[in-house]
Structure formats: C-alpha cells, structure tokens
Length: 318
Image 1 (cartoon, rainbow, N blue to C red):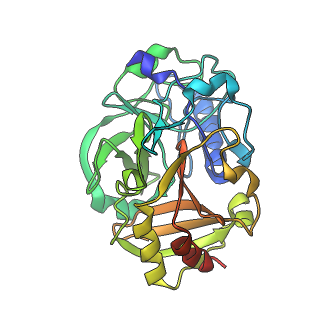
Image 2: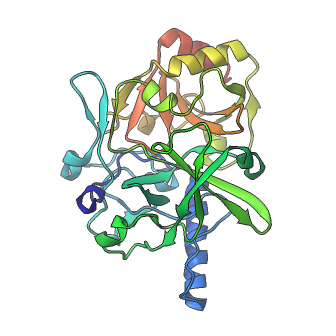
C-alpha cells in the first residue's frame, strides 16, 4: 500500500468553516502535545485534522477557487475515460509536507477515507452507528514518513473509535463516533479516490438519496463564503425529489486546469449551496452552479445535469 498513498488529491473544494475548524484542531493538538506526548488529540467543534495535500494541486483552503497551474502534476489529475466516465486516482502524499494544505483522513482496510461534506447530528448518529471497526491511531502529522500511512487506522484525527454506518457500504463510508464534553458527536469519512465514476449513481447512489429525502434548504454564495447560517427552505418537494432522482443520471466531468467552472462562479447569481436532509438524519451538502453543474465533497469530479430538471430546481433557489 505504501506506493498507493503518494499521489496528490485533486480538485478539492474546502468550505471556509471546515478549513477554520481544522486549523483550530491542529493548534489545540500542538498545545496538548507540548503538555503530554502520550496523547495526540486533534479535536475541534466540527471536523478535525488534516490530510497533507500538495499546494501544487487543487487545495482550495480559504476559498481560493481559482484553477492553479498543475501541469507538473498532470499524471495525478482525474482523467476522462473512453466510456465517458472519470477515473479518480488513488490518494498519494506530496513529497514535501512543509508545502501542504490539510483535510482529515483515516487509513482503513488499505484505503484512505477523507472528510466529507455530509453531516449528521450526534444524537441522530446513534441510530445508524454500526459495528465497531477499530480505534484510530494518532500517528500522522505533517512530518510523518510514508511508512506511517501503511498502518491500519493511522490517522490525523487523534484517538477515536471508528464504526461502520448502518445502511451504507463500509467500503464507501465509515464514521467516527463518541462523546466530547458529555455530548455525542459523529463525523463521516468517505472513500472517493482510486475509483472510476461512470455516472452520478456511482456517488449519489452510495449516499442513498433517492426516495429518502425529508427536507432541504439552501444558502447563497456570500453566506456560504462567510459561514453565515442564513438558510432558506425548499418548498416544492416534487421538484426536489425529481432533482435527486436525476442526480443518479448526471454526467461526471474531471476537475482540471481550464475545466472547472466553479472558478468563475464566485457570486450569488451563479453559486448556491443546497443541503438535503435524508430520513436517517444525514445532511448531504451540494454546490450548484447556474449552468447545471453540481459538486459533492472534495473529490476530483463534478457533474452535469439535464437542463430542464436542473432549471426547475434552480428556480427554487431564488
């Protein structure tokens, strides 16, 4: 597995609040390490800790949505397949950890699971907490050697219990669950690298969205960009459900230089964040662009939807 974790993750879109929570967690961990070398916790209010990502690829910390010049890393970028899909490379680490941005990771069953843009309240997470898979090791930081990533449950999130998630394939999603300050807390980690996406079903099908929607809300780019919780409900459930079903049929496109429309959509007219709550309590966060493009999480592909169905949904986001 050692050689498989050296490519750079591609086309990462990291919300501002996620970046700030990670940084808070890192500072807290460093303070704790100074007081005690025995325990290395990376905790914060929400998602905590970090995967080292080469700044030569697509790490959009602090909302730098511009397309960097990645010609030196072209072999590691997502590529379109002959069948119209997108192949997303395995995650590999940058050679120089001192030039890196960050996102949380867990090594499980020979795969890298990273922070996700799907959330769940701690109390609701109890109902879908599955079998305990193990406990993470606080074994990775920005100075770690490659060998550190070969160890099962190696992580940058400190020492936490890891569980499967009821109703979801553990090859796709696992969950960190526990109590912090007496309150239940859960974070999802997903494996969306080293795969080929042929249509939206290969991602949204794994999220179990169709026929499982309870509600939805959206916010504008400026509110998203400034971490303002100014959400507006989606009233028309038929349009919402039609949109979710169509997600399964969307066409994947590789994120790459001059191929990523999100770079030019930093405004309220063209960019919306849509949060879809499912019946099991999970909240799937999507980025929608006016021209029919859809983004999920920190993966190296985005999706194009049928114009008519997308326009009906876009009309609800006004």
